[in-house]
Image (cartoon, rainbow, N blue to C red):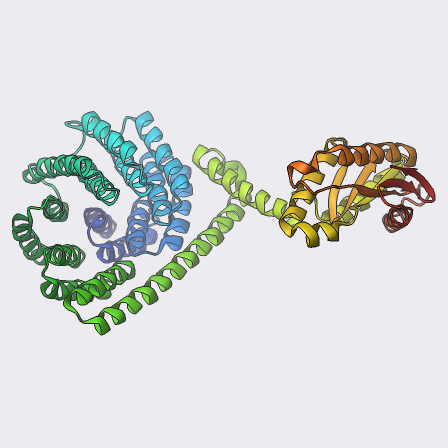
Length: 556
């Protein structure tokens, strides 16, 4: 009994420390959470294990292991749903939204964060609601929707000031200041310097307000990063000497709290400031220090960015060979990072499909949760879209030949079983090769797309039109005998002939030839296809722009 209580106390301590480090030290968070999970599973304590798993997911996300983190986050959401752990569900939804944001899936990110906010509001959990809003601000920043981001940030500050922990309010203020700073950068690049200056003043005011909260127990890393942003804002405002002093203070602070990521960012920003102030030699020193730290941290995107600025700094120093070397390194690393991101997104899709299969095994239980129902629907929509793409012709959107053959097989079987007629019409564009050769392939493609729209106006919902190949199309008419099929074909022929093709190209004239099957006895797909194809050949041999049922013809 004593041993169990000691293990529980140990797990709680590990989870507390992991939570304290979630925003600061990814590796330590993963280490603490992993030990907590092992101990909780030994005790069979699902609730404490669930808490530790969420800390583990947060750490993995900050390590850049997005696909694995998302897979675990979806599993954790299911566990929290089964345990009726609503705060845990909110945490999972926030985590899933944050992972999607880092992968660039911003629409999905916003949906999960909105679900987290709604659930937190329903439960009256103001701290969790504030966290969801703080994450939404980041999504709007990445969408470069700075106006919406600043609006959400201001509303969040007004809404939660005095109601949530200083830590959570600090994160909201931190993101609010970052919105203004990045908005100023965007405006500066657009030449709107007056508006940019106004945003910098606002960012500085928010940063100083955040600084005033440090005595209320804000995490030291949040305070340090806010100071670093203050330096960057001062530098952007042209107050370079003041900014230099704050930069140097931030470097010392980052080393004191053992935050190499912050130190690298400050060194990088200091290098930018020196380069702008006409001191490229000193800038090279700072950029190289930042680059080494980024290399050690595995932050390859930042490493690539630093090589780009090193290239500019060396060029300003007149060292063109070094500038070229760094530029090449920038492109090499940037290409690798892009490839890794694409691979992560592929792994993400696999993880989601695995989740779908797992959900199907226990669908009745998991569909209790609206969030899981939404995830299921998203994956089903994806599968349906992929399935639909496999069945359709990419240019016209009609069914492709494989779909036609499967549909015709089934339609013939039903026709034979219920003793009903079935007809097939084969058609192609007269002299289509001349359109491609004498006008253009682009116009040829537009002809095929327009043709599908025109013939579709004469078909029923039960009919199927398909692109058979090239400029050849097939239409299956269940329940129609050859005479009815001939009438439908004639309407399609006249519709094509009467269409204003000159709107596409002044020299364009389009007609079609159609062959109607007359093989009602066998209901065999191959025989019906053969009959329609033979009739189409006869229509072309008889002068084109006509409908033929075997040897019978209706001329245009």
